[in-house]
Structures are given as C-alpha cells and as structure tokens.
Length: 113
Image (cartoon, rainbow, N blue to C red):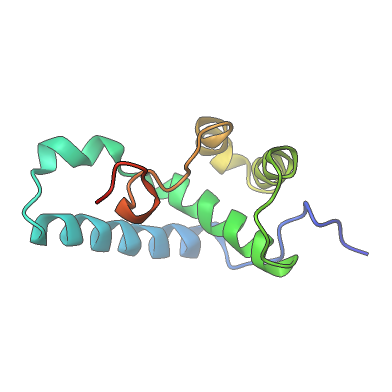
C-alpha cells in the first residue's frame, strides 16, 4: 500500500518545469491584461519550481480523496516532494508554513474583491 504522503508518479522534472513555465507566462499575461503594474505584482508570483511543487502537492491531494490536508499532512507531503525531487528542495522549504500557497491568485486572497 502506498502512503498518502507519497507523491504519485509523474512526468520528468524537466517536463514539469516546462509546464510550470507556461503556467507562469499565463499568470503574468492575465495580470498585465487587467492593467496591473508588473513592478507591483512580479515579486508575489511563484517561481517555476514553486509551481512544480504546488502541482505535485495538488496531485497528491487529488489522489488521496481531494480533501484539504491538515497542516501536518501538508508538511509531510511537501517534505516528501523534496525527498523525491532534490532539485525542488529549496522551493519546498520556501513553501513550508506559508499559507495561502496560491497568494498570487486573487481568488484565494482575503483582500480580493
């Protein structure tokens, strides 16, 4: 039996990074089309590796029922991602303990109107 903290097998890290880079480009374009100043929002956007980690985290959550994980389980999943993908360890450590993880998404921010 596979532990619910384990990340389900996925594509190569290079492919995940390419997909995340495309997603980041979409996020930037979306914000620019809304007329936002890139000097104001670029620092709050995730890095490509942070997007990869969040994608792997989301896939793990979906694979094990889709419910919001406890803080402890979330941290275990993130640490497992770092263990399974050492090049992502730095991004994992930046995300550990930071909520909401999608701070760049206006739909998840408390100050969004």
